[in-house]
Length: 297
Image (cartoon, rainbow, N blue to C red):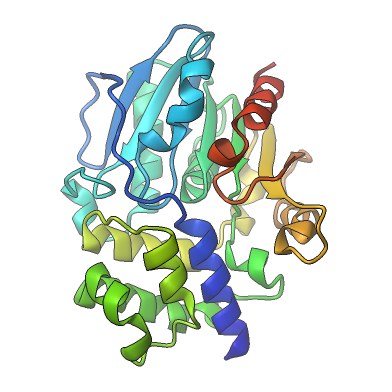
């Protein structure tokens, strides 16, 4: 039970920071989808940006202005996150369908091997899109994302370990709503392991469609893509927050991320960003931009 509590606390903390931001005013594309919205900005080599759980493209706003000076950015937002209507994401699985829509966007807009950067859940979407469409993606960067998030909390964790608490989290959001959890999380008798305060208070959970949030969080907690890594032909860069303070969980990030991506056919490039937590591009925007420049060069 203690393992499950640790996994839940760490996993929700890493997967949901920076929720509910409003989308910036980029130019809307002509692409139509019931699952994603894509906006563009800038000119140059194509770079697709995919945000994390319950975030919109606003998560990139502090760095997009710089990146768009020499790139054509394609900023993806998932329907049901922030103030976007849920569309087709209101029913059934989310991440696989979103990954298919990203691949369809690449094909229909005739992008040639674009670079893709995915943060958190968006990193898993990017990994799936690259595995399912070899040759479609030219290079891939994940930002504080893992093919199996629980392994970043406990390397020996399995889907079976996480499934019971994933079900609790799903039902709590789907049927009780985030406001109930925010005000009564400790008294509901749910085995949240102290995670309720971290999610709903200090992180400022601002919502989205509860059906989409519940399903996406469930998938983030239970989807294990490690077996798909050998299918990824594109070179991969893994960016993550790191701390030299041995008392910080971030001090162990090198070992955990290297282990998570060990089965890639081509060894990944690992970029640790000192002083960053989960929101690397916001916590350390200058260092993150430098990592992007190395990735794109």
